[in-house]
Structure formats: structure tokens, C-alpha cells
Image (cartoon, rainbow, N blue to C red; front, side, top):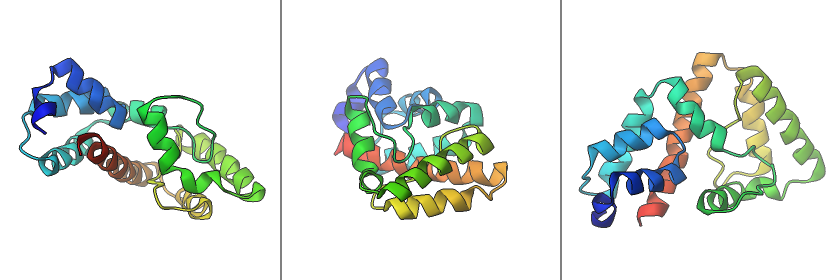
Length: 162
């Protein structure tokens, strides 16, 4: 924690953006430094994500690959996404096709990628969640997305800082 607190604001923001690609979130956390512990930073992350306007959340969503889609990018964030989505990579052909269809339906309905905390979930579980969430209204779904984004971000922050 001491090392991250000592980074320049630009370097600290850059490290955070690997965890969550929402510049307003990264800026908010950098402005709150120093943090005494990883736990304090995680709590601040949840709080900052919770008060961002939806337009400020969108860059984080736009940076996430679709569930089940082959991740072609390189770098830390891409590596983390591959690991987090491992359950979708081994899907049988029918489930993989259904995930593509669910992603398309979700994006058509809500205008952004289907975001889910995928770590430890199978392709079938993610598919069921996508189908279920298609029934949400926009306000409900935005709340679900924020919660999922917060969980993903916490996991990535822990990886970054420990």
C-alpha cells in the first residue's frame, strides 16, 4: 500500500484503470490517497463506484469483453479477463452459441455489454444469469451492473495490491 500511495497521481491512475476503466473512479481514488490498508482502498472503491453517474460507469463497461468471446487483447487486464471468464471458455457448442445470442439480446436491450462477476461460474450459470437479467428494467439492471462491477474491481484491486 505504501508504494502505491507514493506513486505520482498519473501513475496511480494508470494502475487503477487496469482494474476498472472508469476514469472518474480512478481519479476519485487517487484524490483520496493515502490509504492505510488495502481494505480501506476497497471500501473507498465501492463507495466511489456507487456514486458515479451512469455516464462515468460506461467506460468501464465498454472496456470489458463479452462473456464467452475470445479475448484477443494483450496485457494485464486481458489476462485477468481470460482468467475470470475461464468457465465460459470450455462451453459446449450449443452453450457457446446461446451465450453469443444472450449477449446480443442484452446489448440490444440495455445498450452495453452484459457484465457479470464470472470468476468461478460456469458457462451455463452465466447464460442463465444473462437470460434472467434480460427481464430487468433499466434502473434495476444498472444497480445489478454496479454491484457486479464493484465485485470485479475489488478482485482486481486485490490482485494489483497484494
